[in-house]
Length: 476
Image (cartoon, rainbow, N blue to C red; front, side, top):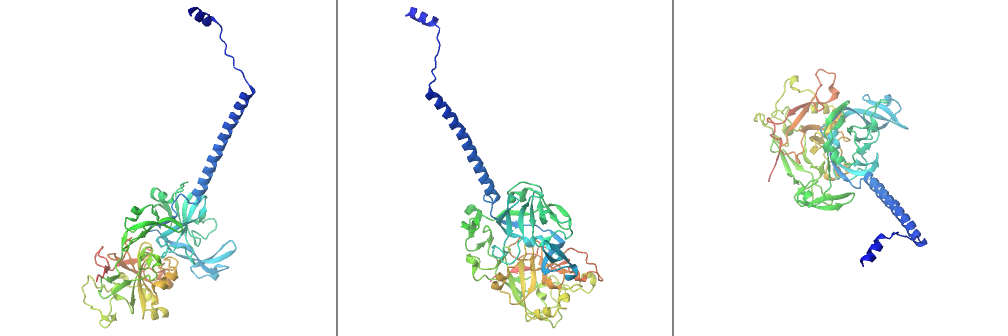
């Protein structure tokens, strides 16, 4: 055995590999298969990436319904398009200009833009700038507007920013001075798709005749993922045009069922006999809310006649004056009674009724009218309106605080707002401070007195102490 091992170890060993025709074919097809799988994988990955990108620009992976709060910004000289067509400036009124865009020219009015009037729901509609765009919804129902031109939030490729804009509001009527994408609010430069995240991490820029930096807005997703998002006061259910939405249990309302039902009857701090009732929603829109909700808040009304001293502070009636068929006690405590101003320095000029009483229509209206208290995005407005107002007529009106001229301070035609609240997000006007406004109307500019005040004029408190609240719940 040892001899054979020695011989074997000393022999020259060579490994011979035979190469047959069949082996070469296997290697050839193996290489083709591997190469084909490589290209197939690349095609699949590229197709998936393209699909995801397209779906992302359509808003498929983001929130489809947003709740937008544009903050407290004001711009006193916004150019707003009217329905009146024109050829030259002389075809428009004195505070208006004729502006041509493309083939048509319209009169534009210079007026106060209150950004919070555009607060509310914005739903995904289209794709612009390779990003989803969001369109403003009806302030009462949350559905698309039928006759009102909506504002929009979109991505502007020219400045690589998200912008808030409206097709009928322009930053300038001078050629070459108008903003890119005609923006009124814009973010910093970004390539972000998530507008909700962007509103919390980035400061915005507000246009108010000049750029205001470090401006804050708030954008929330108005959809839910599960019942916990509804604060366990409702169920998270599928809805048309949105992914999922909270359906609140009886006794609760709000986007996430965060609110208890509001008081149905409220009373004035100044007069317990003055009560306002919540406006009922007879058809209920298929939900459990039995009142008309505007900007997510209820409305209150009272039928009145004559000057509404019970919701005012300045001036009081004589001994023979009456309202609500109740004689007003002139000697009531000064804490709740109004202060009579005898001097122009006390802002007695520019009285709401002094302006409106020059109108025959208003003189007729004040003999029988509805005093309406409604929310407008950041403040409650107390207004004198037509007595025929009802829940049904209001729902058909398609109300918008800006386009219905709730307040602009320009002239008599929009001077229905008598009192105004502090900035608040409270779901009812109860325990909210209110003010009577003076020297807020530009029709008096150039006269004896100075009108260089804030857009709301001089705000005179209706109660003696801050935080006291002017309206209280009239519990049974």
